[in-house]
Length: 64
Image (cartoon, rainbow, N blue to C red; front, side, top):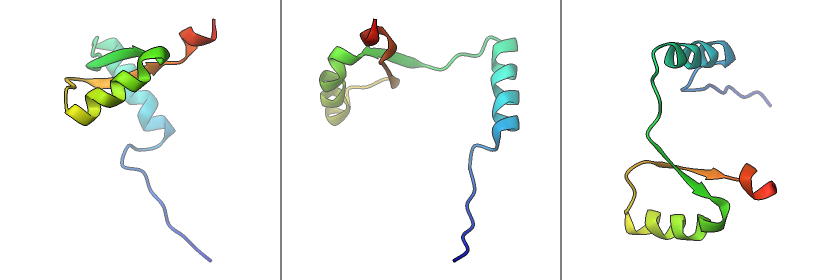
């Protein structure tokens, strides 16, 4: 079986170039960092459409 796949975001090289460009020009994403303890509340907010920015769940802090 053969398959073809692609990526709308480009490959590794293009992604790195984009990240380097953003860093050089101080371009940052609009995000809301959510501690892992509040992930259920974040889900409820998504359901209610009470979200301004993309959620980023902070898992690392919960491991400390």
